[in-house]
Amino acid sequence: MSNNPRYWSDDEIRDYFDSNPNLRMSQLARMVGKSIPELKRILMPGRRASAKRVAAQYKAAYKLDKGSGGLLFRFDRDGFFVRTEAQDPHGQVYSASITMSGSGKIALRNLAKMWNDPKIRREIMSLRKKYAVTEYIDNALKEMGTRGRLRWHSWHSPD
Image (cartoon, rainbow, N blue to C red; front, side):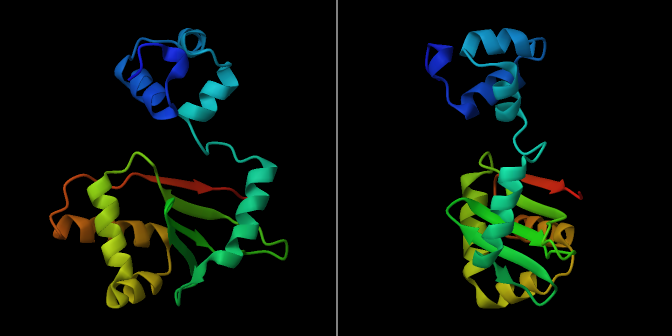
């Protein structure tokens, strides 16, 4: 962690906020030189989807693999992403889950190994509910004896 809070990364800001339960957001905002809305976006990423970000996610569907259970998947350097298919004529997404950057490195490596195994990949892609996918992956990682865990960010956004 840098000595000067104004140069802290987003992860360092989150860690500091989590380790100081009596700290107010206004105090932290002054320390790091950010506004409260900026700080909220750092501390609670993805809580409220902006129209631009949601539209970008709809366009990203073209790069997703379609599973036999009706879910869409993507695994890349940003992590593992699973979402439901669009349920209306406007192509709006209703729920999705993604691995967070705070996930354990070993857990992410083992997830990559699982995703690259064709048998396990088919099994994951055959599931019908996104929560079943995250539960399956978490249980498989436990069975592998993986230290660390995946942190999931899930959202549900009907319009």
